[in-house]
Structures are given as C-alpha cells and as structure tokens.
Image (cartoon, rainbow, N blue to C red; front, side, top):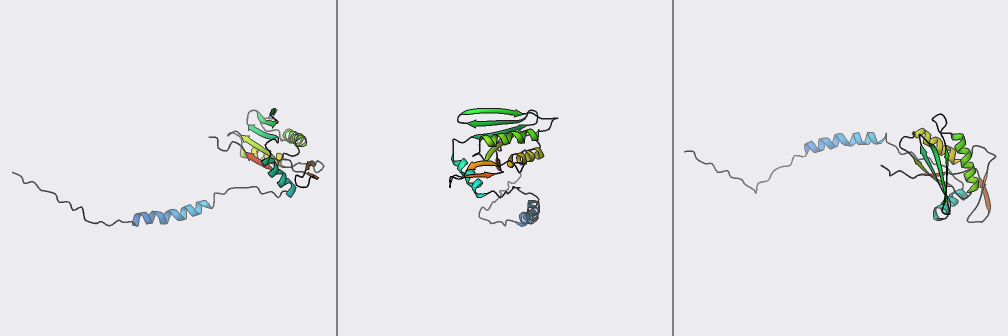
Length: 181
C-alpha cells in the first residue's frame, strides 16, 4: 500500500514582493508620456478685444432676453442660421456653392444680423461631424470681424450708457454640440 503524504502549509510565512518589473515598466513609460505630451496641444485663438466689447459679452451672458444666434453647419445643406429673439425663431439657409460653403454670402448675412442685433457679440456654432476643420475656421473668421474697414457696428456701452462702435461682429464663438457622440 501506498503511504499518503500530508502536505504541510505554513500560513505564517512571509514572501518578498519583487517590484523590479513594475519599476522597469514605469521607467520606460514616463519618458514616452512626457515626449508624447509635447505633440498634443490645445489651440486657443487669443484675440485682444476692446474693453467695451468684453463688457458687452459679459452683459449678453447675463441677459437672458437677448437674441440668440446659432449657426448649424453641414456639408450637404450648407449653413443654417437660427435667430431666437423674444420667443420668435427665424431660420435662414445659406446653401453651398459647388459643394463648398458660400463664405461671401455668409459674411453678408452675418453683417445684416449684427446690424439688426447690435448688442449680440456671441454666437453658437453647431457643426456636423463631416464638416472639415478648415471650413470651421473659415466660418469663424467670417463671423469674427467685418472685412471692410468702412463698416462699423454701433452699440451702447452698458457701464457709461454712451454709444460706441466697433468692427467686431461676433468675436466669441461657442461650439454648442461638443458633447454630442
């Protein structure tokens, strides 16, 4: 007959944890992460706005009743301009020309909108996923400032009550669909 062996397990024994492989991985990962972070940059377009325009933008944020302008951009239809003012909604579409956004017509329409709503300095931009980045930058450039030095927009300074003028149309552009899937 065979003898049965009883296995003795000592639960009170200690063991050493070898951290050398983990440290080796960390030593290799940290420089890779540092080098790769140099290539990832967040781009912000800084513009120096006149103080009265900055105050008007702050005032617009606080004023719920001010007009709200949204540009919905899509590659097929073009740019849909939605203006909400006092519960009314007006929609205009600037169709694409030769499968490209008609920037001249967009700029002309934005000038009309600014003249109709002089206290509005902020618009929402809602592009579809298929719109190219260069097209978005071109739209933002068209909306930011008037191309002609002859065109000035008059608005009332909220602090002093005096009338001011500027060539900025919509210097603050907010992407309204950033969180969409």
